[in-house]
Length: 163
Ligand code: ADP
Image (cartoon, rainbow, N blue to C red; front, side):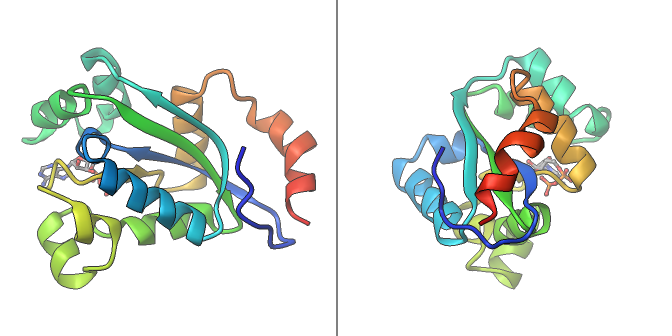
């Protein structure tokens, strides 16, 4: 675990993914990692993984039937990713705002310094994922880190991390 700092307030968890387009480019990977640390997230867990097509379909099942769904699941299964459990007092909204808008055109035009504004390639190959609510974060953390016990983490680790 890398401790980037502590605020004294309760910590929230979020699930961040660096998608295959980011992992394919070491400088993008390094820049996003630097964004994580400079915004004082705690990296609670991190792993490099590769999703199968079936796993990608399950992760994005809420989008099943949309015109970009097949493209999306093929892309997510096309190469390795990094998955992170990040902690911060505002982990969910902070990571979402650092990511920038889903669509790369909007990201580049409206939030050019965001991760997607800087590195996103297309609306699908948009570098990163972040949970959109604390409930999604819990579900997505369990999806990628089934060995992680969120309840135990809040009981035994979180109180020591917010100093
Ligand atoms: P976000 O990742 O910003 O939470 P969504 O949950 O709406 O956005 O979409 C999930 C992923 O599906 C996006 O990150 C992107 O990779 C892909 N996607 C969403 N909308 C489109 C689109 N209109 N065209 C192509 N791909 C899309």
